[in-house]
Image (cartoon, rainbow, N blue to C red; front, side, top):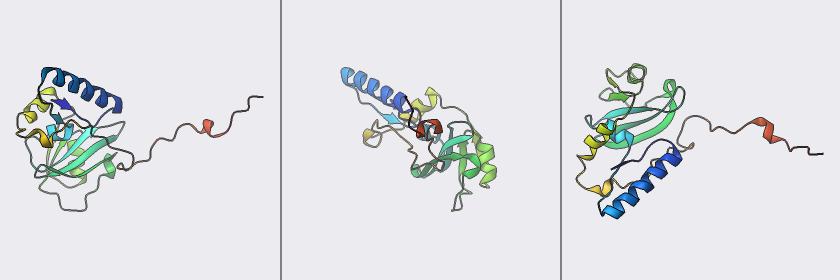
Length: 160
């Protein structure tokens, strides 16, 4: 079993590659589980939030264990167009998010433990749905602008 993200791009790729090598040499099957799945192990319908950077979070909405929306944004930018009063908000700053989208149930959990990942992996019956592919959230999926670098490099350097 390997965690497929979201997280650091190189860290995810390195861990998946290392685990593929180990599993290949031991001739065992590799299961990929992302952090959203691990946190949703108890609730079939949930808004899952994970710490990203600063006040930003990764978040997704799961309905009947199926991902219906995923993004990254600041907490105050989380908006839902549908009625999600039946959801449970689980994860980082769950109470604040639940209040902002008018949901009553929440579970504050700041980190994913290896126990969470292992408990979820025990529920996997068919590994076809859990291939070890990295879960990347690209800037196109996010609700905030990508960092463009320092302005000082926009002008050509005068080397004379």
